[in-house]
Amino acid sequence: VNGVVFDAVNAALADLCREFRELNTGHLATYIPPLARADPSDFGIALTSADGHRYRAGEANKPFTIQSVSKPFVLALALSELGAAEVFRRVGAEPSGEPFNAISLDPETGRPANPMINAGAIATTALVPAATSELRFSRILETLGRFAGRSLDVDEEVYRAEAATGDRNIALAHLMRAAGSLTGAPSAALDVYFRQCAILVDATDLAVMAATLANEGVNPVTGARVVPAPVTVQVLAVMATCGMYDGSGDWLLRVGLPAKSGVSGGLVAISPGRSGAGCYSPLLDAAGNPVRAVAALAELSRELGLHMMHTS
Ligand code: GLN
Image 1 (cartoon, rainbow, N blue to C red):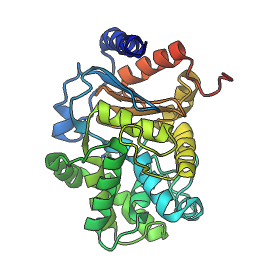
Image 2: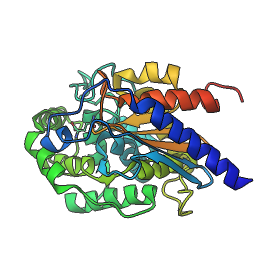
Image 3: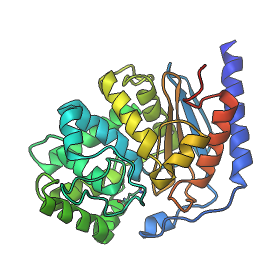
Image 4: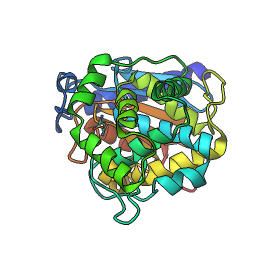
C-alpha cells in the first residue's frame, strides 16, 4: 500500500513540475554575477512528510545558495538560545509592508520590523551567542545542517560577491548600531550574515528543513531534535505573517501555509504536523518570490487541502 502512496505523491509532484515549468514570467536576481547566471528554466520541488518520507521532482538536487530562506532557521537558533522575550525585545514581529531590503527600523527604538527582512535578520544573526564571529557562523552552519540532516557548505564566490556588493546591508547594520539595536560590531554581524546567505542547499534539503519545523523541531529523517517544540510555533507564526515579504498577505490567502522565500529562488512551506515543502525556481515576481514555486504550492495546497485555516 505504501509504495502506491509514494508513487502517487511523486507523480503529483512531477505533474506540478511539468505544469508550472511553462510559467516563464519573472526575473532573475542580478545584483551579483553568480545569481544572474542561474538557469531560468530550472524548477525543482521536494516534499518530506512529518514521518520522514521523501518525494521530489524536477531539479530537486540542483545546488543553490539559501539566501533569505536561512532567516527562519537562524531565528529558530536564536530563540532556542535566548528565548522569545529576549529575541522579540530586539527584533519586532510585525510585517513591514515593504521590500526585503527596506530601511524598516522603528523611528524611536531603531528596532527592525521583523526577523524575515534583511535588517531584522542581520540583528537576529548577531544575537546568536558565540565568543567570536567565526564560532557564531560555525554554530549557524551546524544548526542549518541539523535541520537538513547533512553537513552543508558555503559557496565562497557568492559569499565574496555578497560582501563586495552589500552596501545596503552594510548601511542597515550601521543604522541599527547607531540606534542601539545591533549587538557588537556591524562588520562582524555582516560577515556572518553574508556567509549565512551563501550556504549551499537544494530543494530536497529545504524540504527536510521545512519538515523539521513541521515535526515540532525533530528532524523526521535523522530523528534528532534540532530545536525545542515551542520555538517552531514562534518561528512558524513569524513566517506566516512576514515570510513572503510584502507578498505575505496574498500568499496566506492563496496558499495558507507559513513559508519563506529567498532571492536565489528557494522557498520553504510548512504544513504543521504533516509535511514540509522545498522548491527551487530562480525567476522571481515583483515582491521577490519565486514565481513557479508560488503557483505550484498554491495548486498543491488546493489539491491536498493544506490551507491552515481549514478546519479538517
Ligand atoms: N543576500 C541577500 C541580501 O541580503 C538575501 C536577500 C534575499 O534572499 N531576499 O540582499
